[in-house]
Image 1 (tube, rainbow, N blue to C red):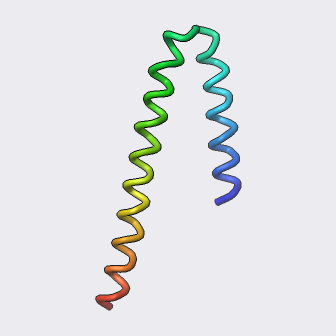
Image 2: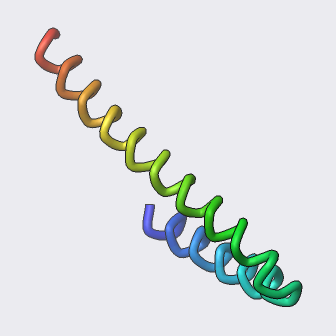
Length: 59
């Protein structure tokens, strides 16, 4: 899991540097996309925890 997080962070940094070449007009939608992605991951993480607890209780 740690390797996955490190790799994900390195890729994000690389993409941010690449997009920064195109200026602020390109950075704004990229940041918005990252925020939407983070909210989605938080919701899915919450559902994952909820479903796991619900499943274990009903075994």
